Length: 595
Image (cartoon, rainbow, N blue to C red; front, top):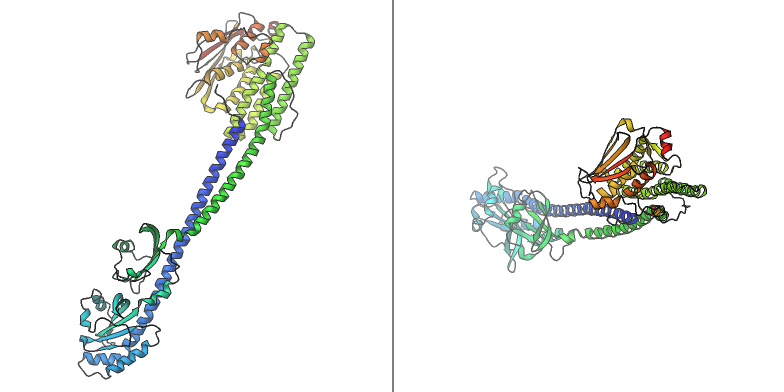
């Protein structure tokens, strides 16, 4: 049989794996939920910031829109443009109109240019400004890509990016609109308003941008009118980027830009149809996440270390009573019978300790009785042979408890220990050496129950008993060693999908016959002869050898006579068939005569 690891090792390994798995899953889900929360907050912050920038930009342009509306709809401008449109002499001199415009633009604390073209380019009015529009007649801009939008807007302002002259060409924000006659709503001319790009800087300053981050603002024609990178101004937005945000819905996406992972936050203005793009480095956006990750990992590692220490302590405490009992049982097998004096912390092990001490006490009494009464050699052999069943069986029971603990079937422990207690009482009872077949079957049922806890569905036992033989007298502990031998030496070494043991108890003439066969490894003819050999079954050696078929074979021969015992053959199931024959006895007289 292969070497098995200790219960302490298996408890520590099993609990450690469970704890590590639980902590790992907890860390994973904590980090994932924290990541999602941090990223969601970061995205929300970016989106709100871009919306605020877009709102501030709209507010700036709306202020100038209202200014241009005030000038455009003033009676002075309206009357002059009506006169020019009607080919009449203007009522007010052009210099006065320019002075009027200067007065309305004087309150602005940065340089702007406001220029009015009358219908058919017959008259031009302008304020005083260092910004110079590069054309002097409306006719000169009819071919511009943005010019058709002025007429389509019917008096509403169209905002776009353009270039003007100020010690060289510079980019500016430009608004244009038709001047409408408020009497008949017919066009009277065109108004142009030029703003320096710097008016947006104050609004953009709310962003703390890194070296690879930037803000872009594009007009309705997808021309970049403002960028924190001046090289971008005047360029067209990438078509792929425009397509991603074609819905106009404010949102944040993650995308690689120039081999860098970036969050792109987008907002669109319904007023001027301009779009704001904020490119934020993904690492910078979720920098708090790295701190959260470190904290979670540190807490997780500390938790695992503490849990492993607790697991080791708990496993050591739980397995120590079992290891002590196993050590004591090993000493019993070697001839040392010292009782267990230490009390345990749990009820189940306390029952086992009590049963062990009771077994030792009964064993000591048996040995003392044998010495005092100088029993016959045959009786000494019987007692010695039977005494071997107790420690060996207890080893198997401990093995079952080990499997129960390893499999964590804790709810079955109480029932298992109860069955074990019944088995021990039956085994060490100093009463009659003979019982009915029914009583030995009950002992067998308890043994099979414990074995099924160990092997579960892999072990199958088919038991058939002729009713007439249930009250027959039989030597105590006849059935259990047969099943135990089949499991230990026949089934455990065999590789099978399931293990099958078939038991049949019936009468044949004046004999009671018991057959036990299995689908295990089986035996060769030579091995069958060796298994029933009596060479090593002297009274002394029998106290120090394992339970085997030869042991039971010799017990039967000692009690019933040489014509009875065991026969081995090959089973039709593929394993070993053991046939036991004893006299068919029903009453106390026959039993007494046999002894």
